[in-house]
Image 1 (cartoon, rainbow, N blue to C red):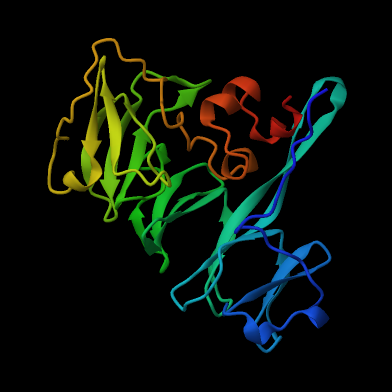
Image 2 (cartoon, rainbow, N blue to C red; image 1 turned 180 degrees about the horizontal axis):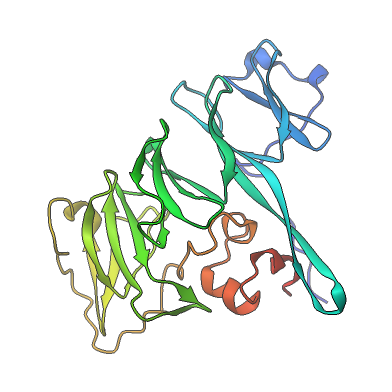
Length: 282
């Protein structure tokens, strides 16, 4: 019999308490979340409702006027199954509000990834499954549909891809590159793989071209057209042997990836490409 895992609270844990037991004046946040039924809204430090309860989830807190909060509502959808049955699912649709509770982006995106180190920049995926990079004023830094996939920005860079991935396998013509926060291609789309570095607190990444792979220092890429090689060459490189996590991003926005941490290939292989089936894994 397996030993039951004992979970404990950490610095990310949030407690629900009645308003009568909570002193909002001691809360340093400009917007304070509260629940009503199964919906989340926001009040100010005086207890006045700024945003009516309407969201199913929120991410981040406003301690400063430059802070924004990602919010989500549930989108219900379904697929026909054998015997005339319909399997129904729900997925979050993401939006963004500012410290005043004003809507920056309506909750209409399948994915909304904040840039690390730049509070004004977001990678988004719309309901047509197109990716773009947006400023909070709505301007397109990278227009919808230019790339088949765009990662979040970290170290001022984001991975981009043209072509598709099916069941974890690169299709013909599938190429990777890097863009900066202005949408400029820092590395051209000519690589077979670029390892993930978003949120990994890494200063390097590995680029793969054919059977050759090498590490590059991210900060040294600006102003250069080609990566500087930092050793670690291999003539028989296995692009799936990622020693700090396999590929992520194909299912960005899903609970299985964003909250549970499952990689693209785990979702493809173990969940048959359905990230909502994560709950059924043994």
